[in-house]
Structures are given as structure tokens and as C-alpha cells.
Image (cartoon, rainbow, N blue to C red; front, top):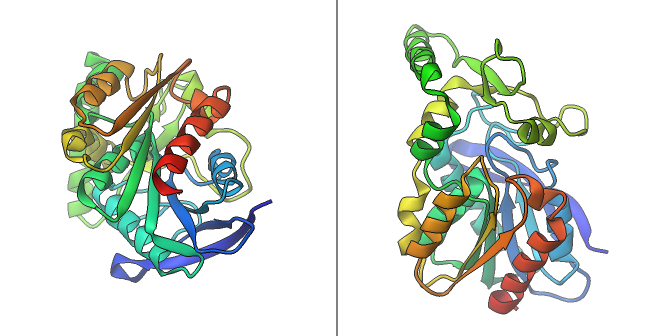
Length: 297
């Protein structure tokens, strides 16, 4: 069985990021995979299953918590800045390159959901990566917002953004909202039952909290990682897409895949956005593992 150990490394601004490093049996150096979670998720949200599957096949695997989430440092807490997360992820790649058990010429990247969007940006802009897997990736924050937020709720959301901005100008900390809630009276990023079930799954005490900054939603609505997809080539790209994804939206993902250049591969799996972590884990993990074998082994 692969060994898991806690690690940390320094990102921009001397912020310490923390995570897990999985090391396979046998002498190195080994090919490696760097992984991270999606919007306001932490590594305990189902990523160890993927990491162990990859590590037991001979890959060193790094899974880190994004800045201001989980075990990683960073303030304000629970704040999602996609471009900062991308910059931090580059440092994760550098950390892997520095490890004696890793072959620095054979590093791949796996990102899911919001971080699946990051995978597209990093695949397009960091040629150290030998291949990329983007699982149920965010393609367009703007288009997602149009479909997931009822028209009658947009004015209230924009008011919340404006009030938060004014409060920060006045010296207040960024305001918060829930990540998931089924109570219409509670401002929340997600209300779908599948999202609530996923985020609220049993986790170790203190690993995660159900809050995120309001300004994270503004950043999400401005984030357009699908614009980078034509630039991923010549880095090999696999997209794992759920056939009934109402979170990052199946049709947007399929249209983006069509714009991507070769080499590329599409894996269409049954179910919704969160099924790759649960009911369709075997299909999603096996497909990604095959891609990493082809391009890193």
C-alpha cells in the first residue's frame, strides 16, 4: 500500500500550504501527479480515493488544500480566488520537482470541478506538465450563473456584492455566506441536494466549515477558464464529463472539448456532477489512471 504523509510548502507571500504526499512502493524516481479540489472543498472531500488509486499504480501523488482552506494557511479564511489558487498550484508543481522520489520530467495534473477549470488554465500556461485531467470542469462562471441563479435573485446577489465591497472599504472583513443550504432564507452558493450531500458528508472535526466569502461568488461569476482550452495543446488533455451535470453544465463542457486541440480524450460518464467521486468513481479514476499511464509512465 502507498505511504501517505503530511507535507507543507511555501507559496507566494510566505503562506504555508499543506497537504498529503502519497509515495508508491519501489525505488524511484517515480512519475508524479498533483491534485487539488474544487470550489471551497478540502482534500478530505473524496480525493484520497483517487490519490491512492494513482499511487498504488506507481505514481507519487501530491494533494494540497487551497490557500485559506482546510489545513493550509492564508487569510481571509474561506476565500476563493481562482488566480491565486492557480499561482499556488504552480508552487505545488515546483515542490514536486524538488522531491528526490519524483522524476521532474514526468509530472501530470488532475483537477476537479472549479479546479478542473484551473487544470485547463495550467495546462495552457505551464509546460512543465506532461498531461492534464480535468474532471467535470468549470468552463464559464458567467454561463453557470445564468442558469443556476433565478433571474429574480440576481438583484439581491448584486446588492450583496455591493454591500460587501462598501463594508470592506470601511475596514470590515469580507462578509460570509454558506457554501450549501436548503433553507431559502440562508444565502448560499449551492442549494442542489447533490451538492448538499457531498459537502456535508462526514469529515474529520475541523477539516472544513460551511462558509465562504461573498466575494468568492463574484470571482466565480467572472472566471472563464474555458477560454484557455485551445491553448492546452500540445499538452495531452483528458476531460471527464458527467452526462447530467447541472453544476458545471454538461453542454458547456462538451462544447469546450470540441474546441480543444489534439491530443485529447473525452470520457463521458453517467450521472451528475458529484457522481465521479461516488457512484462512478471506478470509471472516473480508471480513465484518469489510463491517461497518466499513457503519458507519464
